[in-house]
Image (cartoon, rainbow, N blue to C red; front, side, top):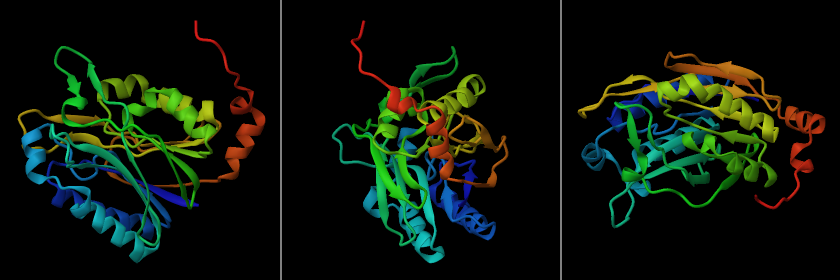
Length: 276
């Protein structure tokens, strides 16, 4: 199957981001894609919680979700929305970082709330506390798609191999890691982590990413690493999008999953053990 990643440079204006995304999806289909993958926080990348309160929606009335469902149905394609920042009814006012899989009928066939929150201090000037604004999910998700069974994950989830392993054991043939990755940790770990998750599980890994310095109205600028990546089940990188925003097309051969797992049946060879 031919698929495409949209590498975005999203702002904190969901309406503006939606217009760009719709144009890019159409371009991907013109280029032959039947499955389109977008990055984390496709609708709004913001460092300001007050700005998010002003522009975000609940899932039931989110324009980005509605329009991408409509477009999937119109073009008869599958779409992975890497994630949307969405309002919730939580008493503490935290948002959800929620990923969606949409089938060619425009139906949501899978949704997943990011489990692992990016609470880190990378340097004296770069600190993230994702859990202050987003509530963590609690359930791993696999969905049936045109690319077989897909295990859903988001960004920081890639640092937790137990999640990838659980998804693969439950039947996932492809793992998704849409991201808005820090440039510092991206340069150090992005390629290594994604290749490792593919090698350990014998899955395709597809990671659509945000890129560049993002135009936002908040006081703090945000820059992301880019390098949207596709890794085959043998750990070979078949697409590295670099740092330019755009549409990147690639081909997937799902028979490669069985081939890789036959050569190194790590999932079958795993044994229970007592922790030290």
